[in-house]
Structures are given as C-alpha cells and as structure tokens.
Image 1 (cartoon, rainbow, N blue to C red):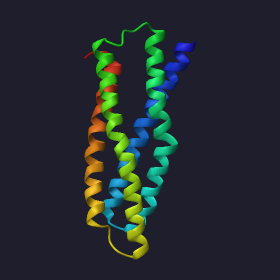
Image 2 (image 1 turned 90 degrees about the horizontal axis):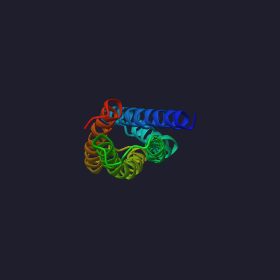
Image 3 (image 1 turned 120 degrees about the vertical axis):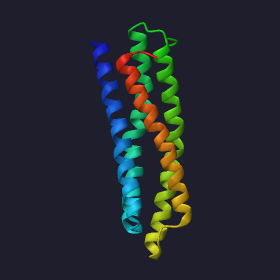
Image 4 (image 1 turned 30 degrees about the vertical axis):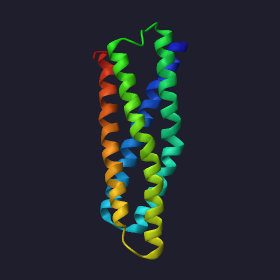
Amino acid sequence: MTYLVIKWLHVLSSTILFGTGIGSAFYMLLTSLGRDAKTVACVSRLVVLADWLFTTPTAILQPATGLYLAHLANMQLGSRWLAWSIGLYLLAISCWIPVVFLQIRLAASARVSANSGRPLTAAYWRLLSIWAALGAVAFFAFLAIFWLMVTKQA
C-alpha cells in the first residue's frame, strides 16, 4: 500500500510540475508577444505566484518520492534509465531555478513599464529570450524523463 501511495504522489506531482510549467510558459510567452505592458505585468505576477504555489513544492516532492520509490522497489540508482532520469531532472531543475529569478525580474520590469505607460524595454526582451531558452531545455529534459519512466530504458 505504501508503494502505491508514494507512486501516486510521484505521478501526481510530476503532472502538476509539468503542467504548471507548460501553462506558465504558454501564458507568459503569448502575453509578452502581445506587447501590452499592463497585461504582461499582471500575467507575469501570476506566473511567479504559480511557481511558488505549485512548481516549487512539486519540484521538491519529485526527487523525494522518486528516491523513496527506488528504495521501496530495491532499484539500483546506478541503473542506466534511473541514472539518466536523475541526471535529466538535475538538468531541468538547474534551468528552472534561474527561470524563477528571471520571472521575478521580468514581472518587475513589466510593472515599471506598465506604471510609466511605456513599452516593454529591450532588457525585458533580452531576459525573456534567456527565460525561453532555459525553459526549452527544461521542457525537453522533462519529456525525456517521462519517456524513461514509462519505458525504463536508456
């Protein structure tokens, strides 16, 4: 019973982690491309909030439940598919952490632009480009992790 509960938490938290990431990226990017600083300021503030409420707890829960599942199932952490999954997770999280700080800076920049009635700045667009690149790496890392978790091959 313990194994099934932990597995359920692992799958549920991965769904929330991936879904929140995709949703946040979609709304942040499309809203930014609309170039309305007031809308961008509002949406970017909500994206930051979603990261703190949903992504952060699930980003912590994922390795905790995954390692516990491996322990319960007597899996070797050095098995190729599991080692690749852990490595890809570390890659994704190492991209996500700077993304969180970039989102905070993007939200602040958009708020300043909105309050002053000016368009989004060149600095905003540079930060957004870095945010998008890091997000793309994390996205593909998570896709690979899902593949490895389902197929258990490397």
